Image (cartoon, rainbow, N blue to C red):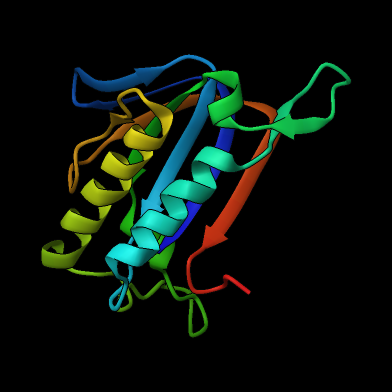
Length: 150
């Protein structure tokens, strides 16, 4: 699994005219699931997301986590994070997991992150054409891949 985490002052996701998720200060998380990913990957990434120290402390040093700040989280599924661009100019998505694996792992990630934060995680709609809006704070953008743990 691969995440792109952005520290935001606000973010939202809509499907057509319907806003399916909206947050204030916190983390906007794009979630990609690859073939072969497991529940352990989802759990590990949820724990990393909750504990990632990318919010400023009193000395303006990035030393506080989403858990520490009480911030919100918005998770949006995005299979294009699994794109391979090694050959040619058209990305290949052959590594992206199909719905049968991707949906349960995306849902598990969201559920586990919600448990760790003690509040709901706002979400997009899996597989839908979504419009994402955000104000990246910093800007701070972090990429985490569960296959690159060491």
